[in-house]
Length: 300
Image 1 (cartoon, rainbow, N blue to C red):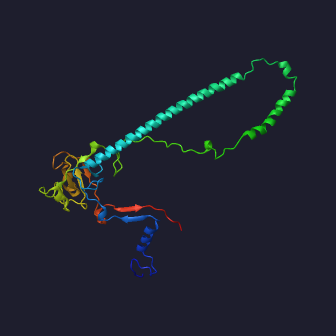
Image 2 (image 1 turned 90 degrees about the vertical axis):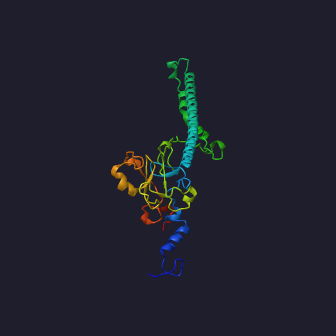
Image 3 (image 1 turned 180 degrees about the horizontal axis):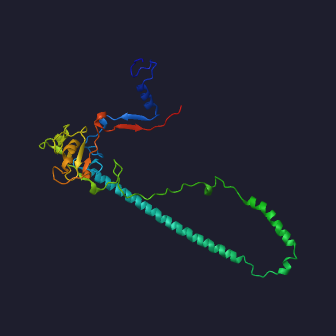
């Protein structure tokens, strides 16, 4: 197999790099890309603001948020749901009033049809002895349908597209009943304010200020073993104390007694929440970091 540069066009081999480059430029075909370290947020950053959390809270699914950001999000979603609910109730009331008008019009039509049927009844008694003698009217009555048939067909007119009353109209969009549950922006599961867990990170050096901590790469440590925390270290949060510990500490120390080492409270499997981390950009981090974009495909 011949060797040539990435952007060489004189070779007879269509390399994988050239194929990916042409696929990205053409706008067709599914494009896959693995995210690097620059595209991954740190483990202590908010999932909404992507900034380092000052007052971090965590959902039961393990996603970290800034308390102010997630509360503003929940309030915004509830306000939006209230607006949608108001529009739905207005539409429901409008449909109810229109159905009442339709029922009244149908009742009015039934009354009018009953009146016409009553008025068409002959009040004068028919003489049975004279009806059979006259055959002339019967012939005329039999001939009436044949003469009236072409008149009925000629009276029917086809609708015209250019008549404004016959042109199609756009019907109003039916609003569906909105759901009152607020969903997590990351996991898509229901989220409540009383289910948020306050997270307490243990700083590497308690004497350092917040500004000096942000400039360091290793900012926090495990609350029990004092191991440095980062995107490459799987972490967990203990629900009673909110302390952040490593999963190695959970497996080797905490799960033996199932007690919170900081508060002494009894723990269950539900109280140990694995933290969703971004990874490091390497395959060995154990996190799937591949992005996929489905685009139209040209059939050959």
